[in-house]
Image (cartoon, helix red, strand yellow):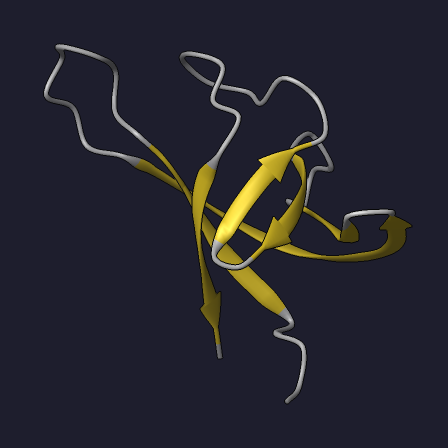
Amino acid sequence: MDTPRRYAVTFPGPPGGHGPPQVVIVYPTGDLTPAGAVYADEAGTLRVVIEGGAARPLAAPPGPGHHTCLHALPLP
């Protein structure tokens, strides 16, 4: 199975605000951690490791709240 070249990572909307989620596209960086390959957005501000459909930020992600597990969808 080929490794996806990019993922859509979804941040939930603000709690109680009924706002839409924010979707960020991440790409492989070539970096590895013990948990797996590192992906980042184009600016490099969001760095995540993706495991089984979940994106785990390597640092506090940008945007509202501090989410430790985000939905990650592989893109063609």
